[in-house]
Length: 484
Ligand SMILES: *Cc1c(COP(=O)(O)O)cnc(C)c1O
Image (cartoon, rainbow, N blue to C red; front, side, top):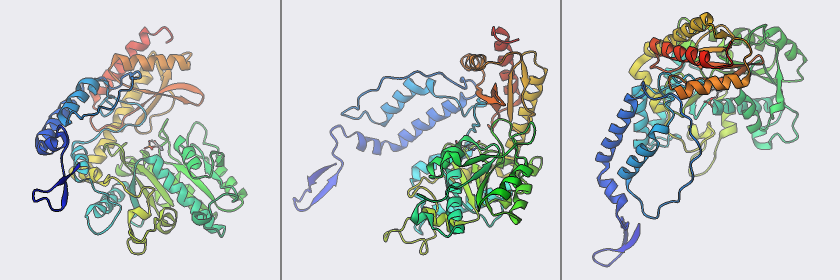
């Protein structure tokens, strides 16, 4: 913008006056640009079934920032021409890597509205956005059998949700010890112990972020052949613990979707003082299906709960929920007092309870999809994904080339090559399947054995996708010199 004299020469105003007028032109062309983007997006979505699920992309040389802008339409064309083929089709039906959800149609249009409206729902009374966030949290508690008494908020992912849980646990432990760590810090404080059987890697990351340290994890023995804690061993550690500790329980491990016995762990709270955190990043969705809800029984003993939305709720990245029974302690950790914002007493706003101050209106895509498909629609996605994983498990069991490494409990199939499954052989096969373009799997190591994982978490995946993916596995394993 340039400063200009007004016509009458008195006073000044600021107006668009860009050499080529690209910004002004784009402003006038906005409906046209949105229509172009819409067509382009629709074309991309239509190809999701046919595009290669995974792509290999090498490094690109960096380019210099242009002095003059090209305008939005030219940039859209450039992006589509140059990059569309190299975007991972991870939202498509045969991408089985990690635990990757797609995006339901309702969540995509909800997400478009988020950018259009550009809200900052940290909380105040001048927008309905924070109340829609509360409403979405309420729906999710109902969907997942989480008590109404929990305070919930949206964060960027399960890692950040785990961070909120662990940071609030740290505050609680400080209070048990007569300290306010939010003010004093934990430098010089007695170490904090975190008891866990199969903590997700992000728990270690979060312990580093929270100043507790990765070494705080005390490994609890798992049940034989399981990724679930031996609760008797947990109890022995609790007896020996010198003061309150954190127990980090898993509701759905990434390799075998195993669940800690949340009920048995929760009952120990009567006799021992500990903070119970439950990482249910995707396994929390067991709660929405009558078939699997028993797996999260006892979840309401938790002090804090992590559930991802960009995995099994099938909303666009990035989105997850945090649920806490300790809103006050969470507020001590995250409060952001400033005269111009209003204190947490004046405005019990998300800004005082979440790591971010300014934040995206990420509750809206969740709200859209929950209303569009309801409890039964979202339960159907979970149950269909599990049925398809179990079908793939059956194919693997009958295969000459592969063997299952764990029973298929929900939506993940953990398997490896028969014979000598070296890391190199597994990676070779994984890359061959990716380049073949019929499916995408990600590698893992389970009980010391290099393995592949197929996580079925996409609303679009159907039986034919499992067949196509399995055929690719069989063909490529047969061709590979290392199999058999
Ligand atoms: C995916 C996952 C996480 C981390 O989630 P992000 O959304 O990637 O931050 C944590 N815990 C479990 C069990 C997970 O599956």
